[in-house]
Image 1 (cartoon, rainbow, N blue to C red):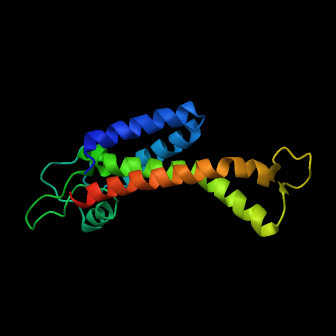
Image 2: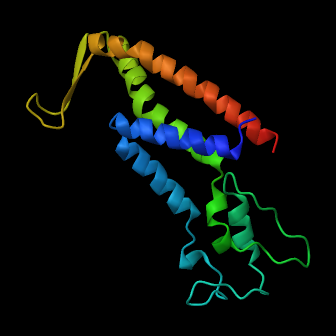
Image 3: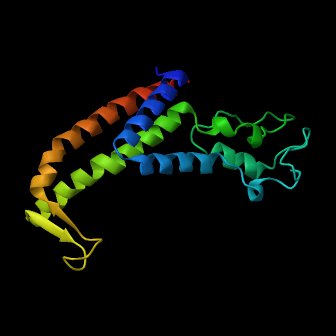
Length: 180
């Protein structure tokens, strides 16, 4: 089982490694997605939330808000028992995405940014039966890029090894989530 502390360490390590390898944009997108999902906008809050952003302590949350909370992956709360107050999402922002869910999201982003393009390039060149494929409207197009079977072959083993290692890490983390 991978603990919260271990997942936090793994997340920090992967973030630093990704930044060191020029994948800061991927890290920023993951962190933004986590922040977006953990944020509670004023439009999502029931009308009993004051201007200061605090909720009167003895009021209940509407059922639709509880249902939205329950649908978020990694949420640590349970629906309240009859007569109990609903959990206040403003107090739970840090817990919506558990350390395990954060690492899994980062693992998916890393595979998507690094392994997927290499494997997809290999499939494209093999399927088209071409050594090189030019993507773009014209050869001088700044957005154009050349996909070379030889270049892809040089990265394919590393991409597959990365995918395998990320899969093993994912499996260990998911097994830990199931025992919680």
